[in-house]
Image: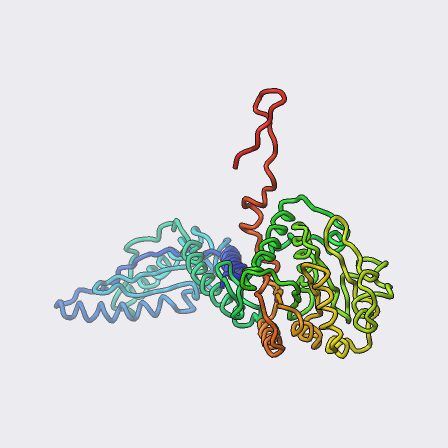
Length: 457
C-alpha cells in the first residue's frame, strides 16, 4: 500500500480542498431571537383556566406569527435593507417555550443587523396586532415583547471549524478508499524495500531510479562520477557478487539477462553488470542476443550494418574474433546481433547456440546474453535453456504481475536455472546517501606543507 501514498495524499488534499472551497463560498447566516409573553386579555377565575387559556393562546399565536398577512407588513416596514431574506416568512421560526407562557421568535438573515431588525420587527408588529384584537374583543389574549432580539456576534453557518473537521474525516476515508481502489486496479508487481524475494525468487540487486547511465554513454566507456552513478555502480557490483552466491559459491560463466516485457531496463542492466565484471579485469563478452529489435547496436552505426555478429556465428560459425567489438575503457567485448534472420527462434533452437556458448565460455570468464523480452517470443526461453542461469529484470514502477508470473513460468518450463531478480528503478532513498555513494576519500592537508592525510569516515 505504500506505493499508493501519493494516490491517498492526492485524494485527501482534493476532498479537503473541495470542502474548504465550498465552505468559503457559502453565504453566512445569522440568527437573532426575541421572546414574547402571552397573557389572557381578561382575569381568569382559577389556575386551571389560566393554564388552559395560555396553552390555547400559545398555539394560536404561534400560527398567527407565521401568516402571510403579518409577513407582508413586516416586509413593508423593513424595506429593502441589505442582508434581508427575499421571503421574511421563510426566515422565521416560532416555537413555544416548554412549561411557560413565552414564544421564541427567531429570524435568520445574511447580516447580524438584518437578523436583529427582522426579529424585532416581527415581535413589534405582532404585539400591535394582538393589542388591537384584544381591545376590540376579538381575542381573549395578547402578546407583548418580553425580551427584544440582540445583535448576534457569530454566524450560525457556515461553521468553518466544524466543516473542516468533518471534511478532514471525509478526506481520510476518501484517501483510504482511493488507495484501496488503486491497489485493486493496479496490476503492477508489488515490491517494497523490506522484501527479500519476489515471485518466489531471491532479489539479488536493486537499481536506484534515475541512476542508470545512458546506453550510449556506457558503450562509449564514459565514467560518470556523480553520486547517482556511484550508487548504481555499487548496485551492479553487488549483483555480480550475488550471482556467485546464487550459483553455490561459483561465479557462473554464462548468464542470460531477461525481462517479461520491453522497456524494463534489461539491456542497460546487462551492459552495466558487464562493466562491473570488467572492473575486476574479468574478460567479459556481452552478446546482443535480441535478433528482433537489437538495442545495443542501434547506438552505433558501425554495428547496425555489420555483416558479422551473433546471427552470422550461429549460421556459418564465423570467427568470434572478427565479430566482437571492444568496449572502451573496459575488459568487455560486445558481440552485436549481426544480420537479423527471418526466423530467430529456429536459429536459436539449433545446436549452433550450444556450440556458440561453449566456445564463448572457453574464451571469456563471463558471457552475458541480452535477450528479447519473454513476452515477445520463445527466443529468451531457448537461450535460457542453454546458459548456466538466468537473471530476471523487473521494473519496480511498471512491470505487470501477470506478465512477470508468466515469465517465471516460461523459464521454469524451459528448465532454466533462475539465479534471482534484479529490481530496476526503485526509490533512490538510501542508495544515494550511503557510504559507497560518497566516492573515494579525498586527500586533505593537515596544516603542514607537503603532508596530507586521508579524510576519515
